[in-house]
Length: 446
Image 1 (cartoon, rainbow, N blue to C red):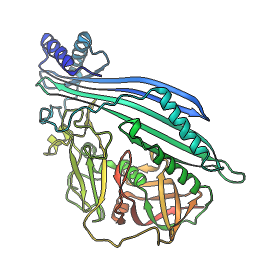
Image 2 (cartoon, helix red, strand yellow):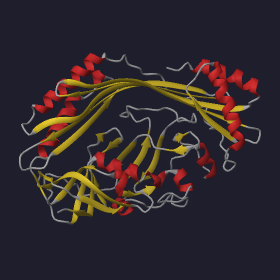
Image 3 (cartoon, rainbow, N blue to C red):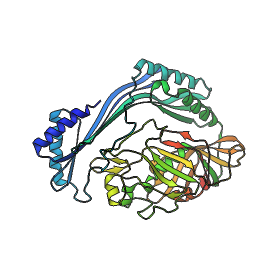
Image 4 (cartoon, rainbow, N blue to C red):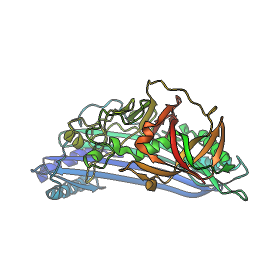
């Protein structure tokens, strides 16, 4: 882990020696141990330490030079500052970067939460037992080709020449299981589940097993469906993957680069059903991967993006906030160029009344569990998508696995076509979300 105070001291003395008046440094480090198994035997055991430190230096013309380093002793920091100083004379002269005005603001609940890592033999035994339980759950389940159990410690820091200094460190554990079936005369079927927690002892391994087992068994007896317009219910995982795929709508950098479905005048306009509310909430109580500050040192917070269907807010870095006369939101990622990204989505229903809907009495409704090929089937600039999916045809609570099908449409039309958000949210690695009902989407079957 980092000794941030020592790095700050090295940077201060080296900057004075080099005649550098303005600089900042952001760094992150990950210590990870992971295991994979294959039929009761260890397939892979891996331990790694990955670190990245980004140094920015401003010259007298306020142009920024950027470099990276992994050498954090006094000579390493001095060399990085010197390299960034030299790079500043070739930097971008447009939209000059600045320190975040909130880089020294106090942060609540910024204490570290590191957990003693579990020994590797315990990781292997735990994953081997999970694989064994899954293989014994049904005769058709013949393998768990993709699996993993990992634990990692992540440390982050930010400091600058004006005296800002932040640091935090947290631990995480995760398990991933993907099962596969083989039956004569039938196509192979599969299902997956992932769970994340702050430690191995808190990891919901039983919940992961139950989820992947029930999904796998439900997919064994499948049938094709005719093409047409269907009422579709998105699982939390599927709906959040769509939000991520079209996140340029509320990304201020994308808007300024004219790479977005919205523009500077879109704030305050109705872009979705009045039933939909969406926030980016890095500090959400269910977010295991809490980050209390971004790469520029700006404190993170809850950002209302869509309220009652209205585009209410955008995600900003310091630079985009200045250009759009707003406040930074704690969503900056620094590098050769500062970019903007989300942290943890929270989707929930507004107070608008809607007719309650339930899969228990629904007829000819498609429940989409997961969307595939998002890298190829999404045109984020046009708003269109055409995506294969795993899911079921639902009739009065009875689920029938769908052989193969694709859902297609326009994302903004989809948002406007939301007719119901269920009351029970589900926690996923991407965020918290209930199942979302959308009317009349095009589905292509066989």
